[in-house]
Length: 408
Image 1: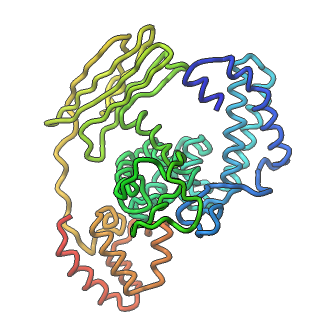
Image 2: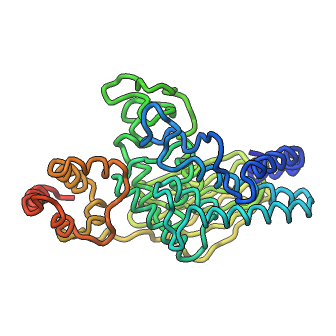
Image 3: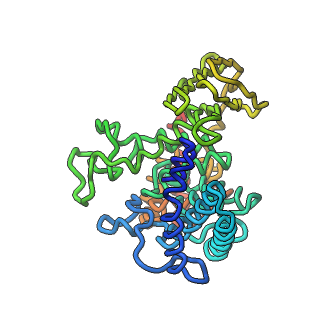
């Protein structure tokens, strides 16, 4: 929290006051982790309330607690190293930077393959590694981002993260070139999703995705607060990415205006009271044109990043407006076919539902695999998959017949 406050408000006093307690905590965890730098002992809350966890075991997430703990051990050491630099503790900065590097190396060796596949093949594991900078910047990072997008797609764009992964997953997808996947995750209405509670009349964030069940009864599993912010942390991504308002220097003395329209949205707006005054960004999309408006407070500057990746523009305080061409007519979708790859089919919502329902009716044990969101073999066609099933020809004929009734 102190580092977040520094980035938002630029108060080095906050860092200096909290620095010793932050350093003490990292030193304590270092003693628990030992020389191998893996924090893999003791109870860990981990990715608490992962929706795939058993009802009575909110800690039994798909991502092991030790992986989560070690990732945050690195994150904490990294923050202490950066804090030490800001408050002038040069020796400490070197010491904790070395510690953070050791933890990163241990994390990679223990939990990541050379190609970027996580030992725990679950969305939260990838989101942590991508957002905290625990992977190599090249092919390893790209492979991890692609796998995360595949897991989200394979799970029907429904949430498969708990308190740890949920604030990070949309950022992880966006940073690795999968903003469209992040938008589909954001706008999903089936449970578990951010919009499922809205369909049930919610005006607050719930502790569980399904604190209120579809029949209107309260989830009997416990921990079903109807006013619990954790899963609402996606609002940070909404401000920074969807609306496009973010700081690039402590205290918002320099802003970043970088909206990323998507998901069929036609407008968005964010407003924040900074130490220098109110900052605003809004955009509207109409007739193939994107209009962005920004209010930059006095004594600050802003870098403006076009969504098409064009030249970055720097502006001073005041109100600014830009209008640029945006988007093209969506390409006509290929007809649904059993010769599509499974990934392509799963990307078509109605077709994915038909495929999964029919597959489970022919192979009931597939329900557990589908429910895990583990994704389908990349590049394999539906026809090839059907050839591996008992009664595969019958399954294929039934699927072809049902696909002809769909228009998506």
